[in-house]
Image 1: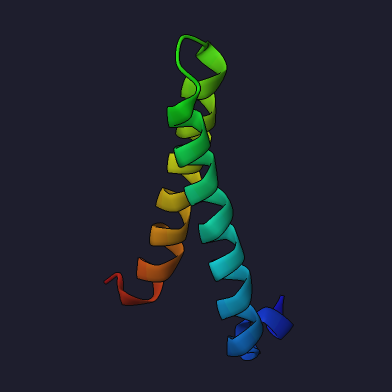
Image 2: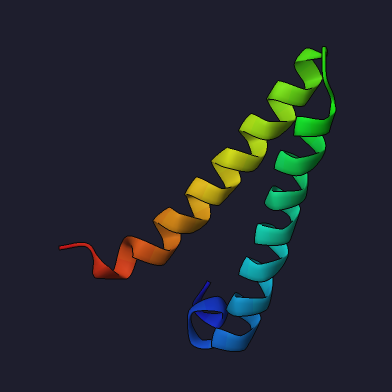
Length: 62
């Protein structure tokens, strides 16, 4: 765990990959009309994006 804390470049690349995956989940879920799978895909993407936002803001919390 300390390796990820110390290596900012790797952490940035991982966050960018997770962001791209979550964004793809939201967009591809929006294109699936009439199926509950599309909604679940979009919710999973939204949860991932909110998780990334939480991790970004964590050091600034008081």
